[in-house]
Image (tube, rainbow over the protein chains, first blue to last red):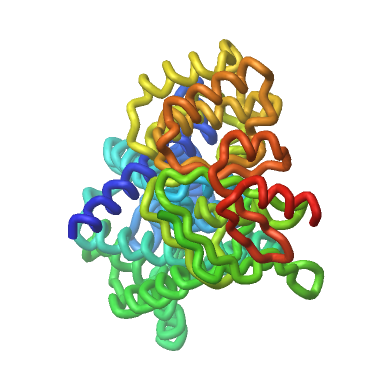
Length: 260
Length: 215
């Protein structure tokens, strides 16, 4: 137990140091510094929401378009960026393997945490701003919103755990990630509710953990304004499996990693 | 104590694999000074990397019961885009040391002055070696892994290394890879020769040097 506590303390220390390092190398200390990490997740959803607002009008299916797009696009941005960042993460950080307490998993975790914290900060900022202008509802059920967000994050992270080692084995992975994340938008629940689909389609898209998590988040925000369809078992089950596979792959790749 | 138990290491090469180490068995007790001998490409650096835990053996086991430094040689272990100070700060954080103490020591030991405010990628290999060496001394490891480093620095730096490593920290374990018989003879109590992927420990340094020269 004592050795577990010691190991835990060391890992926390390493993750903190890596976080600071990643933030200062990526965003620098000039002007707004680490606040840059919320700029991209802030601009993407806001601008896309604005475009949709002008194309489609203020409301659809009785829900504010701006609020709907923002609630979908913030998680989507998180997922796309997290997965993009996971590719090649080991090669980029290989020189840090000189220090034995630094582990491969720390690299993935740190990059993911930055995307997640940036995304949450951006979400909070946009939501508060929109609430002020009465364009965003006060969340009907905070538990469902956070639960959905957690499931969405977990599945994203579990995919990172697989893609990071995979990108070391094959160069193609890194090149295919952007197009894959784009193609899978219909299965992310970003732009439509499951209840708007035909029963056949519903069954299919509910197999996507992202759709389940998104439905849960949207129910947490809009309450009875939406008619949620979701399963908890699908995202939990799939994330568990992907996490396990990812951890095994990371372990395998560590044995083969060549450090200059 | 450091124990290498039947350690193999191979790297992918073309379609096959290059066998670098083929079953290394070694026991290094606390406080021993080991000279690591071997021709270029024999696997000295590979063995040091494995002992440091930078890379993992293909098969076999390495057990360490003391704090082992990272391999001290030409660079490595630094983030090139960060300054010397930033790297020191990072290393202080992950080893749980006080940055202020580390900073004072590296400023004094490396004599790099304002260069410490520059990204490490602008350093020469000698400068990198100084910084790495200073940091590892400030952290106070039980065992130092040194890859040819003594031969890199200038006279003044060599003198400092001598004082800090062999006089002040003479009780520590030391594994020193070198081609120089003089260095091995003056600093090491035992020698290991790596040849054909195997490692052999010699209790007598002159004997080992004799055999090494005839390889």
